[in-house]
Length: 140
Length: 385
Image 1: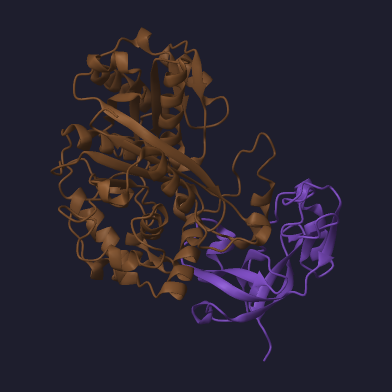
Image 2: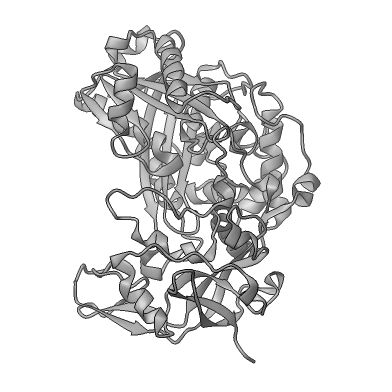
């Protein structure tokens, strides 16, 4: 990994709706919402359930394991932090809990990332210290 | 009761240093008004896609005092919504002559829509909080479309060469349009060999960036006879949204699959009735998934559908006869040009006129194909419905 020489990733703009998500990430988990009324899970863990509009929401730690459902390798980006990382793979990962998120994948040549690949979450600090989930190929 | 489009004007400039968006709007409004055969005081409705207060600023610049506004801003499909909303407002008596305007200096202003992340968008209401989830990853707009393309290829076996056929067809149309930004014909190999932007989309799978502007005038049938040319009639449409669904969405769930069938149902047309398809071609994959979504073929059949010159001149579904965003112009929100070219083809005065165009379908996409986006489908016809 050469990431130590790279400029840090930009921090996400603070948003109250996402506080519980970033708090979970700082503990090393992907936080998914579970509705206390309809029991459905959702990502991100918003403050009102998107299914039944209940405010009774708990944030649970996902397993961090999932499957790549779509991938695009980025060859052009206009901002310095990402120019320094080119080329890199953006992935849509379907977590084993059933919900998907857009992230990036590390520890692999981006052209080797394939749909169906099993991945696990790891966490990296951004410019302001906020930790974010990235993915790496599942250890075989 | 329906409404007529009697004014349609596309500003011919593609690179216009020194121009302002408002100047594009003013010049386009003047030309569209002349097209409609109306006086400025006849305009009593105004639609502008921008921020929440945009119609107020544009009314000031144009010296208008409308009694009906529409500031619907759902990305590139906004203008198709404006036409639908204007037709409804006219039917309800809320307005009689609606001006729809657009102007942008994206190219001269150095915009790079495809290769930046949408992390600094203004959000006065605080409802775009989830955008922050993407900031640390560097997800250019082109990657949001590349993700969908990758999923489509994986699921259906769609190839890059099939996507390339779309870019080739748009360029073939553009070669007949003197104001298109790019007019030199290209081949499938040219598309495949162009530098990669966000896989599997190369440079020629991505739309151009230009300056530009345009205007439309939608009127009550009583005002249609003022038009300098043949009126075009609004025959129905439908809006839709696709979004993350709390993480449950598949990357192949698209708004077009809701708005397209609904627009067919509302208008009474079937896919076989459509002589011209004007579709938002931000990227080649947008065209392919829109063709499938609105119902010209089944999901997964789009790759074969676009082969054999199907979208080009004389094809089974002439598409984006002005050259589209892939070759003609793309100032950021291209939806107004879909309607303008459909109007020109239906009244028979397009520069790249196709024979026998009596029903046109427009379909716009705004936002990210892999996630939250709007889709609006709109039917237009040369014969009063």
